[in-house]
Length: 139
Image 1 (spheres, rainbow, N blue to C red):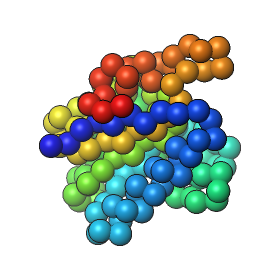
Image 2 (cartoon, one colour):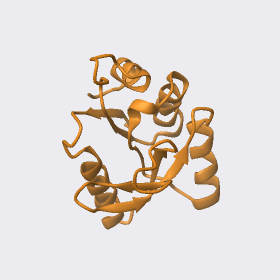
Image 3 (spheres, rainbow, N blue to C red):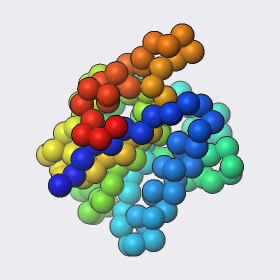
Image 4 (cartoon, rainbow, N blue to C red):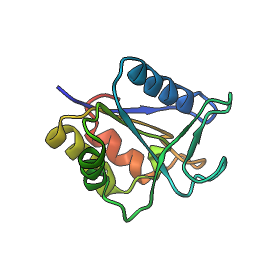
């Protein structure tokens, strides 16, 4: 059974490195993944998911208005079976997008691994993190 996982930790703790390692492990077994990354995270270029130790992959860029469930369905229709969805910088998801991740899990049967910060520098929950903490099957 597919689940929604939310992995959170402090900055520079290796979240993106773990995401990229997870993607590598799926690919090594012949399984296809889809990586989402927010457009506003352009530190290494738009659509680049890059860890501080230099690992890098292309990701699908999303904005606040994007429907991740529909985009994932379209990706499956265009490219075939999908085995895992990974989300980098998940704190930047909207409430609606966090819910769409639950639909990817529940309606499409695909596990989702979301990685991000829990709170900002003032200790306030990010919107995406708030709802992932509420709705994730595993934290």
